[in-house]
Length: 279
Image 1: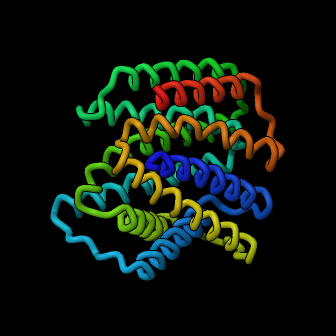
Image 2: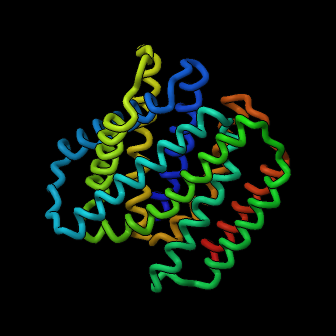
């Protein structure tokens, strides 16, 4: 049953990113405006859940408080670059680069947590990296798309640090409260440093933004439970399946063009994951 948590995270992330891309297309929303709406939706939904379920407030130490602050700062930087990239590029164009996110995060976890080290997992990430590269390296990009992909590369590097920091923090703070503190931190930092200027607020923008925030909150809590129960490395192995779902959403919902190489890379990643988890 523990395997359900990373699967929920994969589905939630795919739905959330599809909603965000629809918001960009239909409403021409600014990236910083979207960040505010998404993390407001995350903060409100997870706070309501905590209140309704009566989750006890964590007892903070200097270490746990510092870890929570670090999560908020890294998440803020990662999401700013991520949403800037999403505005510039289609989901199907972004996903090859995102294919490296769980690989890098898994390697960081492999180095930091000796109890999670298995040669077969290291081999799976190595094969996954080769598959992602071979399936995507020939794609030609325009100047605007290259700029968006540069933003995404920075976001991926930040994102790859978070799972290991989450594991350290989970020793002190529950998944629900980590999600709340993370979302609230990003929201506050965005309002302070990246306030929205001259943005026309419409019900459609707000509905899309808050809705994706609720979906992301579910996915974040699920991924934290996955890390808690399965470890960083195994959880990141499951997340290699994520690009395939986003390709499907991009193709069927957003009418994006998906290259055969990218489909082949996603299929190989799925085979790698299935072979390892059923060994």
